[in-house]
Length: 203
Image 1 (cartoon, helix red, strand yellow):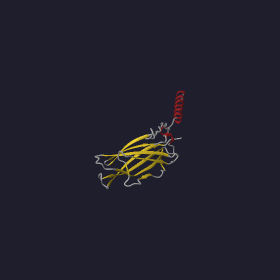
Image 2 (cartoon, rainbow, N blue to C red; image 1 turned 180 degrees about the horizontal axis):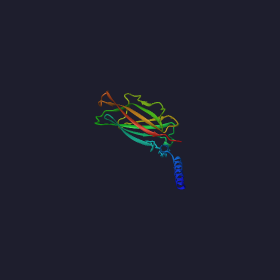
Image 3 (cartoon, one colour; image 1 turned 120 degrees about the vertical axis):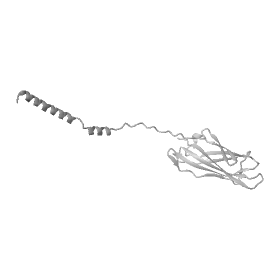
Image 4 (cartoon, helix red, strand yellow; image 1 turned 90 degrees about the vertical axis):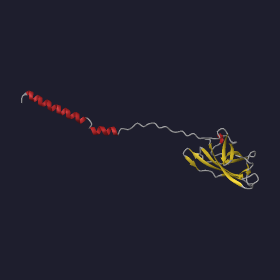
């Protein structure tokens, strides 16, 4: 074999070795695809929702207007205890002043025969254990006269609640008796319902 042919043969063999070495150093296509698929995604920041507790007694008092059939009620809610002292462990006084009016008033009387207050207690995660129902049942028959100019006033004492409480929601029910005529001893029963949300002061 002459020298030219020998050098050409050696050159071809060397090129083949270099090509084989380079291919061995690079990753296979399926390995590259797998590497991309297993890459860790950058977590996105999440926002935390802030829940604002409604406090209808934030200014010390609030007024609600209710209706029960032809009877209209004007109810004032207030507390003699400042809101910063409405803590979970405190006895919390809630005062109620209510007066009624009649649509197409013919002179009938309106009486309050019973009133109840259900106290639901909540924290940021849901409902907690509630205290017993509060009630004021009339001790006179047929009830307390509540038609203007006569009004009903009462103070309920909300007891201590769970230390984790952030607010209470009161469900109030007014059971009323409407005289059928100004001289009748017959009465029609009407019921008015209301809700009141009050924040619990945090330490």
